[in-house]
Length: 184
Image (cartoon, rainbow, N blue to C red):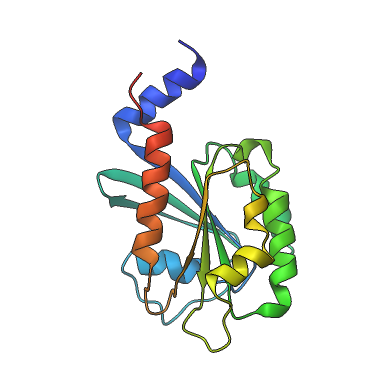
């Protein structure tokens, strides 16, 4: 039995998942995390470092890591890659001028060896704002169809209204569970 098999068996017992939430600054990562956890979202400030929340959902223990997205912090993202089962990439759908940066950062991330095989959920956030790109527009702008190395899904959402957040977390859990918690 190889090391990965042992790790899978351990994870299977605990049914634990490590999910990393990244994106450019002001995309809504912390708001999404607080919304998932049922916390007040009226007083949110930029994340200078990271937030971790452990939640129980559908019989799984989810360790959600929300890491700050300011340009000065992005070089530190790699410190959080180890043992990541899923990556939630949060996009500010209404900030069209930063979508090229968003695409570049995402594609750089997906080349990281320690994220190989991690499930990717792209949350097209801020759909409640006027002029927000649709999920289909973002799929094209971010060139998601070119991603062959990861299972991925894009969903429109709003961290403020809560629209589609549960569908997103359900999808990423299901995809990770199929991949990790299989019986030999």
